Image 1 (cartoon, rainbow, N blue to C red):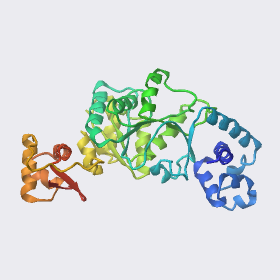
Image 2 (cartoon, rainbow, N blue to C red):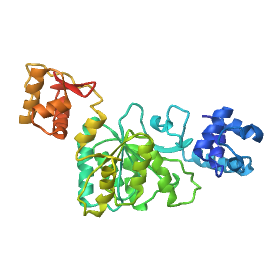
Image 3 (tube, rainbow, N blue to C red):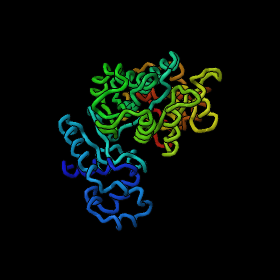
Image 4 (cartoon, rainbow, N blue to C red):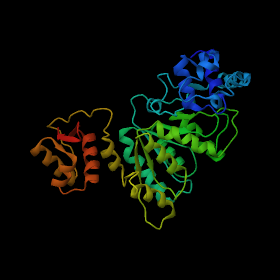
Length: 366
């Protein structure tokens, strides 16, 4: 995008009371952000959902002046911009009506043809919650997902640190501009995130720090991923907002259950009880529900080579050799192994090259 085009997009983003949904309507009607500012007000008022309130500040000269200053910041700091109509914009976020018209990026984020998972939770995480988060990401590591979170205290930073540890790409969605970092104590993790992904935000460098920004940025966390996982949450909190947004986008939501007396599990238990989230007790639950498998096909093992299999793996392999193709649920039932455990075993066997997945959650022996 040329700098002049970018300035008009920034100017449109700056208009008070307009919002991303209405901004997209104006662009769609006129053809470009620049054309919006050059169109007559009477013509814009004919657009469904666009009224005087939305347009009251559109033609103020302050919009282009502010955009010029922000453009200088972007160019000076080599900030990458992602416009919602361009191919480098997060694909799933394109399908969200209220997705930002423009995102700002630090780092080197690669999302094309990737499994993308958002992990959120309370800032007051327990040792159990952090331990579960770390183990969960370790179990997912062979599938090489992108881990998205909010770079906040608690579960967020635990998820992003675990992603870095296992060389997974991670994206921090910020509730402020790229000219600062919150919380300041997490500055020590910035380089690690940027080396393994980066940061995204739709806030400007001049935007004031506001607690409401955290709720607004949650739509990005929920919108850019295939599923959202809530690991710990109290009865109220931003994680539940993110889960609600993900459900509104028709994305899968998972929650880790806890004891009824645990304060930081009440939110997760509520999501499960109200059927707003799937129960998740291990990575195998998510792998099964999303039908995830390793991106790189595992080469078939030559029959003359010996592959070490655990006792349960031997049982699954023998069953598949006898029966041929079979669905996961039937494999687990006939081998007397819980479904979540069978899913994990089959993933390990796939990595060993002795089984392969097929469409419809079928598996067969190699």
